[in-house]
Image (cartoon, rainbow, N blue to C red):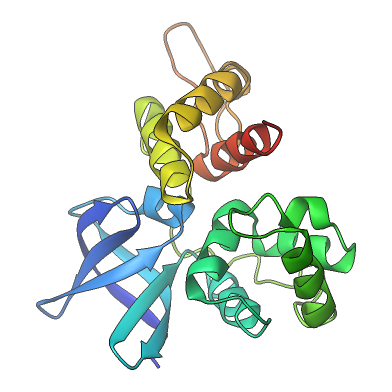
Length: 218
């Protein structure tokens, strides 16, 4: 198993990144929040999970060991493959998933595209007690920062993430318009606005989840 990669980011696409390791460019499928932390030309370290199929070898990358471990545990539930597990981690953090399963919160689980009520019930039933308790993940396990590089970047990263999760671009833009005033006013997940003309820094992961909450209500 390939447990992690450390190398130079060659490129970032809506659903993955190419990381060069030892002269070889490896395509790694990632959550939108992890992709937001990867900058072309910079070195990065991502935790990875290799999924082997008869006709493919697919490498999935994560911002922490906890995310990687949760990704692998999710796939032990019936009907949850790597794509759906990745989508779940794109919408909910590992701790949020632990809380949702422990509390049998079907509403939270059905915010993930591709999971209906019956699917959520099955996930709760099969993963109860297996994901651990909230806070069990390694608090210091983040291997890449999840904040966006700049004020303009977070909007595009969130838009790409929503489209990658199955939403129409126009719906993604509408959701971003709804959440933007509050996020930029408070600097959600980042720094507060410290003066005139200085933009608040918005955490892409926080913004993505806020947008998904808006879309789940429409």
